[in-house]
Length: 185
Image (tube, rainbow, N blue to C red; front, side, top):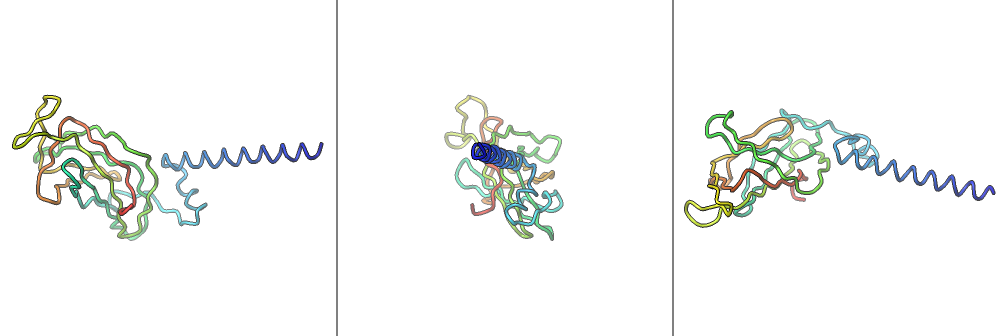
């Protein structure tokens, strides 16, 4: 009888341990419990990145429909970046004319700890403009062409132009974006 009670207690404590680990993992993925997860892994917990601490400093085209956005921690302390960027087509000289794009999130967001000078990146994929010269959209709508876009990161907005000096061209009002990841991963 004692053996049955002991194995029952082991099963219950195992279930509670697994449930606690799963809850901690879900909360960490949602942006909660980051410090606890970092402490468990032996990594010093860092505060969330703030707008004055990070800057989006690069919009590098990686094909005709993709751009890699790079963010740098310019602060003196490590910070944690989590989530996806917001994106808008720049308002041609007036921030109140920015046209927000619907961001379709690709993949899961995980906390990225950025040391001072550390980088993280997110990939944006636009619906392509087809044809040559003026181009066209398969939907029949007119393409949108802009020299820059506005990317939202850590509560701040950054106006970025493509590194190659070209324009952003897209069809529709949406963009697919990956979550921020440590640069190079």
